[in-house]
Length: 219
Image 1 (cartoon, one colour):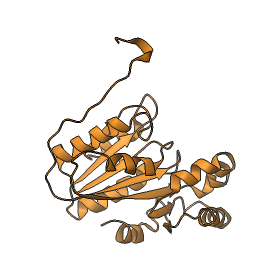
Image 2 (tube, one colour):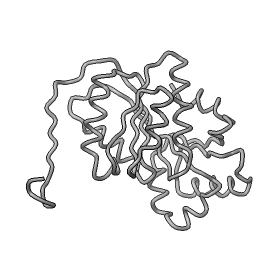
Image 3 (cartoon, helix red, strand yellow):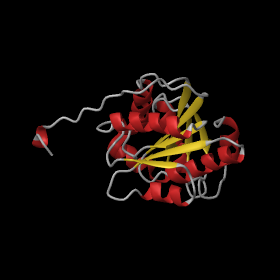
């Protein structure tokens, strides 16, 4: 590539304003292995059954987009973002992808599953800076794994708090296998950090607790 390692790639928006119906964006945030993809599929299915047009954006870290492949195999309108973190080095790519998906697919619901290393609040901020994007609403759905939560916060406490910050709802996944002690620790830690989103105890695997989430969190 001309310019070598010091080259700077400039991405410039040059689009006409988008004029279409309102859209809602859910960003699912959570650490690696928390169960975001399975929860996303349940949420997407809920919207599809209710007649909504849904688009899914997936951001993977690594050579193989496993989650993207899984979602495509299930028949979802899925766009895989490039390798890297969409709230850091790929924020411009995220903005272009979100804009293009809205223009081309015109979804009523957009579900974004970033890498487990992303900060959802930064994704919401990046989307808010897309020029002439039209009307939309958005929220953050935080996902945590109580089984491993104590270990995670012992090593990445500040990161975990930042990742959950701004969540309108926090899904405590794996309710089918998490002990009462693990769930109590997780809930207390979240509340002690001033994270105000409503807590839901769910199991992405069995569907436990999901009816309440779908009725209260989804539109």
